[in-house]
Image (cartoon, rainbow, N blue to C red; front, side, top):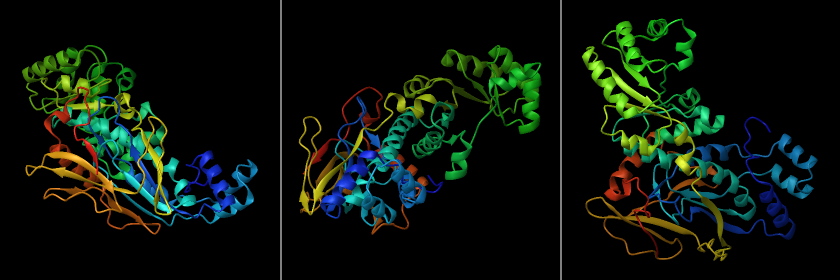
Length: 428
């Protein structure tokens, strides 16, 4: 595969359907596909849309070049007619969807693809692989941000997932309110602030903890963060302040009972005159651990494994279904996997106070529901005639959108305890 192509981010069965549809003449039939979640992960009260920007970037490189076509031919995956069709493939349809940072609920039409069957069916794996991963990570990152209650969050999960997933996860975390990431590629690619400190290996490298701290301060200045729990925490804090002085930027604690240790560290730092030195904690934190530390003197959290794995829900559970053919609604009726036919749109209904009441999903080709004063349409144009719409919301726009969306959620929707989706979906 060429370095710029994303064409092989598709699935064998999609090419099987394409080849069959080309053979019987149905590949050019106008169709509508919808990407949505039938349900939220167990106990979750809302989902966060993320990955739309990455999907649109990938769509631009979705081409079958010589290397891809040669591989398909050598593997006898498809016939010559399909290879010729793929050689000229360019997505020429329309896409609308929820912008990044928007909340979604069961049945929300997160993305709608209007194209010929052949063009639209090839996007299923591309769209689902990106949005399922990114929305899962952004959803749990938003829960962590709410639990942190305004304190800084540093994304530190690069070593716990695939190298490209690590970059995507850092992007999702920033979208959902994290302050920075330790992933330098995410910083380069998306402009996300980066932050980090030394690991235990750096302390162990030196003959003494004092030597390690002094070397770090000499290189990075007193505003750096020193890791103080390699040996004895209280002794590490004393050494850190003795070497750096009371203007030390922060200490980090990465193990033990973090609540107790944070309280002890704060008392010791204050007694040493380092009242402005911050306390950063890390070490297998999830949203529940962050919430449990809310009353403790913690200034920032470093989060890794739970974030990049969705804290137990590594996928958003989204599906990509054909809902319309030649203007005619079609629907799957399989038990527990039913879909609703027809192209749909959605609006969110709010109280005058700004609190969200319900998600109304309706047939886009009909009159739709009666409009109320505080209703807001949710889908925006993303692609027209194969071209990405100019001026789409940026990553920072999505970050602000999510912040506003969470303010609109009824208070019980931000609880970490299990429950039903906080905003019900109504099909009009």
